[in-house]
Image (cartoon, rainbow over all chains, first blue to last red):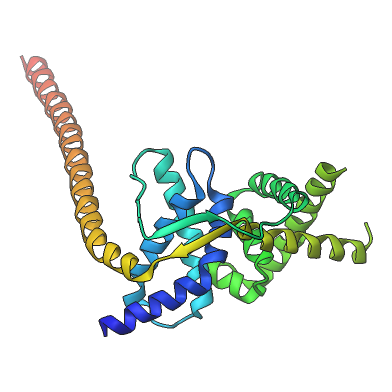
Length: 168
Length: 90
């Protein structure tokens, strides 16, 4: 049983590490590093896996944990109510094929615009950029699918307005 | 902005978003990580429980102080009422 959990944990983490990291990068505001948030998410996945009931897909479950942990850990780290964890077995190294400067600059602009949104809108837009259907976003955020569609229409406009203004 | 143009920009934003995690390589040394998690998680939980108990204790003592204050105010008010009543009777 323990081995099965460990096997599942390894697979989930390996498969989802990049999406988790993308979310952590959005929620991390200096001095909190995305790597700190990433480690918090890893710990939470490890703690929660034995109680995962399969009511939602693993994909939805991982996103839900990542969003919740990033949000709460950020708040707790800001209040100095949480000591950042240090897991030595996770290493972040510069990628050999890093995206170009142009793409990185555009990402910084996008991050700025997403950061200007409120907490709920931020999580909705992040999940939408991850290409999740409204149905899954609704499960993660606890809202209805229709509500997500309405909100998304407005958020997309806001975001596009912000980004075109920055890129001009 | 035309609908088509909006779609294009949104598509571009998705690409920018997806590539954002490619600037770093995330290496997970799984056997070491599992060992770390097994040893650290229980310690974190213990620490967290200790912290929660401390918070509860401090909130309880504050609650008790507030409650005693309230009781004293009530008792003082009742004694005053009784004194006033007897004064009137005299």
